[in-house]
Length: 86
Image 1 (tube, rainbow, N blue to C red):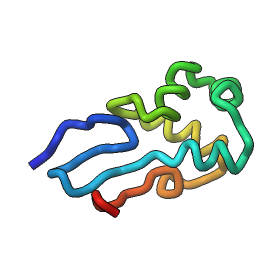
Image 2 (tube, helix red, strand yellow):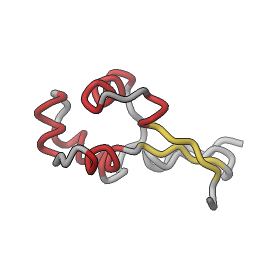
Image 3 (cartoon, rainbow, N blue to C red):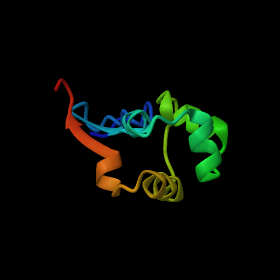
Image 4 (tube, rainbow, N blue to C red):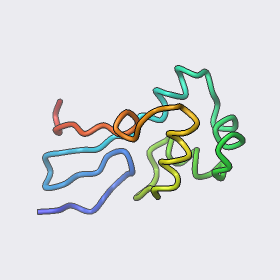
């Protein structure tokens, strides 16, 4: 059973799994603000803010690509799959 995405970095599938976007982690490592990410990726400031605050329902591949390029990471480093409750 699938449950519709509630937040981007908390995607619930059957109530057992979640996918998290580690944007705040990489922003902290690079000491970047939402404004910095906006300026360096060309993503709208609202998009970056929504991703940071986990207020989106989906994310486009080109957004993931821009973030991966900015932080020099693979998509698997930016996205994390975990079982609920862990």
